[in-house]
Image 1 (cartoon, one colour):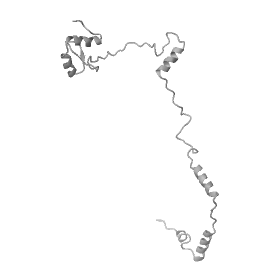
Image 2 (image 1 turned 180 degrees about the vertical axis):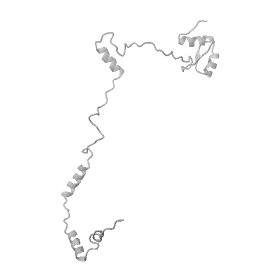
Image 3 (image 1 turned 60 degrees about the vertical axis):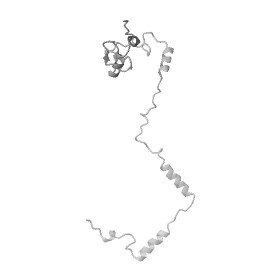
Image 4 (image 1 turned 90 degrees about the horizontal axis):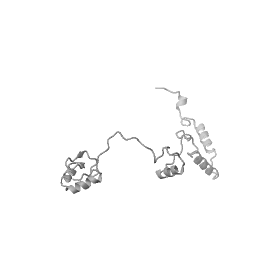
Length: 158
């Protein structure tokens, strides 16, 4: 523990003699106080301007690297622009891009529900999604089966 000398331990005016205390009180009474109405609004304006956040530097915002987002063009706009351009026939555009055939097998869909069909009925050739659809297929008459098959161009005349 640090012990300070007596002179630094006493508070100003608390342990001072009465003459010194009276002198300190008189000097406190003689200090000029600003009561003019004209200086008060200026001080308020100065305070408001000093608190304005727009004037402060913003290190987190790098305005040189920020740019407005690019405008998105709809497909109709792109098509209209491409039609207006005089491009060679073999130039690739949205309308004439040719892609090679896919290496993935084509997906098979249920003839009744339109969901993916992992199963095929061996008797009728209809594709189905689950056992409920299979039970429905078993109740179909042959001409209904033919109409389902004709929808996907797999109809066989019996």
